[in-house]
Amino acid sequence: MEDGPERADTPRDAEKAGGALGMALGLPVGMGVGVAFGVAMDDMAQGLLLGLPVGLVLGFGLGSGLGRPRGGAARRDAGESGGR
Image 1: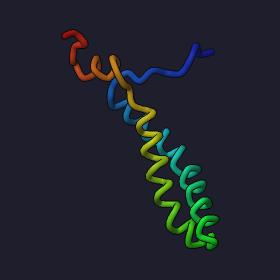
Image 2 (image 1 turned 180 degrees about the horizontal axis):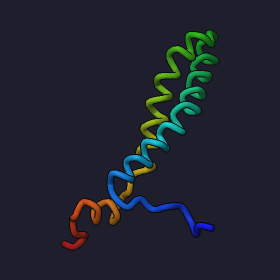
Image 3 (image 1 turned 90 degrees about the vertical axis):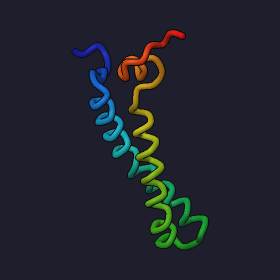
Image 4 (image 1 turned 60 degrees about the vertical axis):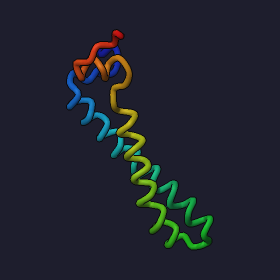
């Protein structure tokens, strides 16, 4: 049994994890935004046509951002010191 989720060892691994999370979130967020646009426009086909690409971009961006290391871990991976 594993103790917890795997930690990305390199910045490239973190980018891959962020991309995978972005792909996993992109479609559901895209469908949700598309349906919301369709309901608002009273035309589901046109709403999906306009909302799905917007939602895919939002979902992919959200997932990619969540998968990236931030703060001290990102600076350490980049070789920057946290001191002043």
